[in-house]
Length: 599
Image (cartoon, rainbow, N blue to C red; front, side, top):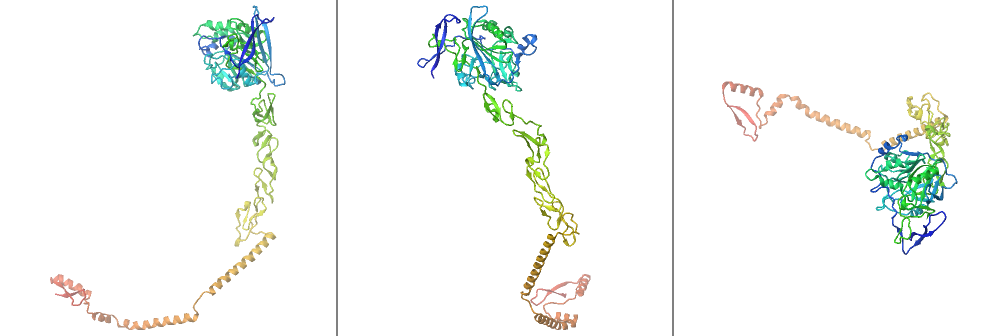
């Protein structure tokens, strides 16, 4: 990109001091020029900010302020009308008590919450990258109507100094450093002064914009510089350094507000030690024009004002490599006045952004279209609020969902018909039919089947011979409807035919099976009786002969010796008494049995 520089021409106007360099914006791609950062106006010799705590600031301030170390100004109300976002005035004025004349800009912003933003250098992420950018570059990218430099920064490293909150996003926390602060809270409240860490991190009404300066110029309409010197002076350094920062003539930048809640951006041109204003003169100038609270921002060579993307101020830094020219310094944060922006840009998805204001859709309200017109408990316990009003639970209806569905209807809005027959009632939520005794089915059109009665036909009849009962009461002395009797007649006739047919099939099956005739059974019986009689005749003589015949037949056998048990027992007794010996005499037969014989 072409480097932008300023060509200065000597002029002699009536209102400008003699030999003032009038800077003209020009482009030179062959020899790019940058600021030499030679007009430095630093509040501290080493580092930045005091080392003491917020408690020190609170304890050292005048008693009239109590424990409050900052001032809050309520939001100015709804100013989202067709009027312009801001008005900027160029002024050339003399400084009271001197022969000096200063040139600058005063910009009055009617709707600070909707049209003012703290921007990081070069855009989001600039502070994290320790980036520096000219006010023109930052303001052009953000489409600022008016813009001026804001917070301090380290000219060597580019690090942003102090607190930085940009469009609701916390960019940097100073860790409780006690320098003058300017911020805008979520509800539009303007805040000026010294903040504790709890004040900065408050989430009940958080900051959407916040930037740190040095020296509180005006507090409640009174010059507050001496008290500010006490609060912001670092005791580890020379007090005179901050005092010199306050007293020296230089280009200055400040921000404050008036009694109507308008935000006031102040800028003057100058050169440190040569022309411009001291902070005392700035405070008196702002007080004269009705400013109530104001803090000082980065000045000196950083002092820059941009209008519609173009440089409108006269920088004091010389250019490199040609010191005949003056170049705008690359700075840190920027205060940007832009057209009204909807917050959030999509109006929470419930409206459209028109001229910086959310035009809410049906059922939504609020600046961000994030609040339902219908709010609990408008819909009672049986409904919920939506953009279209109350949405009632199933079974309920009405604007506030307080009316139950009438009989025969159910569902959301009671717009569905139940269709329950025979006196059945309908569940207003699910639409299920609760049938009267004797009926069942989804629509209660079916009569209980035979043998059952009662609710849901869940009870069984207790009639003799399993006769059907009344489907409603279960009574056995019931006169069944004509259709039921006809059904029973047809069923009985069918069942009788089936039984008779089954019996006939069983008889036919038995008849077809092979079997013996009566004559055959008679012959078999007589044959068996003859055989039994013959067997009896053959065995009868044997039984008639008695035991003697049986013993004789036994002695006829040569393989055995017959010795009665009484003889054996007697012989044994006598052998024990007489001491006679006994011995076994083997038989000559092939048998291996032993035979008793006396010795």
